[in-house]
Image (cartoon, rainbow, N blue to C red; front, side, top):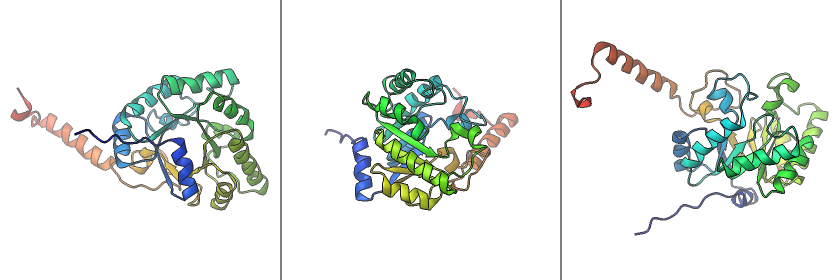
Length: 270
């Protein structure tokens, strides 16, 4: 009996979900085991985020993450996921220098990484870059609001768009990203009413993170929702499981059994 082949999510599916009012679920993943679990659970989109720098590599920001590291983690996730649409982050300095380099690096994430789309941060000032990559037939996700690669300019991880001028700039950013051909955009760290206005203004799906319930979808970092990142806990994070305690208990028990000569027992020996 032939096995039913699962249909992979596409950018057309996401557009249809926005049109029909079905919310889009997105999580980050950086490795094979977690990507496999979330794919089997039915996640719509997996984002291979440059947040890997913070939650896996232990950096204070996402800025040190390299293209080589993004390619490595993207390949690991691609090997695991059969159904989810996979989006890879373009790390800092991979698209800011010039259009040629931006196109080459985006192409690498698709050709060598196996991603289905790329994501890059910024609004009006990256519209030309988005357009240039889209012209290669590479789907692009935009990212406006609190953009972690701009942490130094913003003076830290601060909510964006509370002041009227800032809110107007974010609306202009959203329009520019959509007009440049992005098929979706992340709205991070902005007031819920502004995110609602942007979501109603642009024709493409919006994915919120700390941007209220009216976005077309939501994204969170997997380590945050599982209680595996003790470094910081933003207000917008909800913890759905706390597996750090379970892991710690398992490791402690292992250490004690090794010290006491309990492990390996006869059943673990040849």
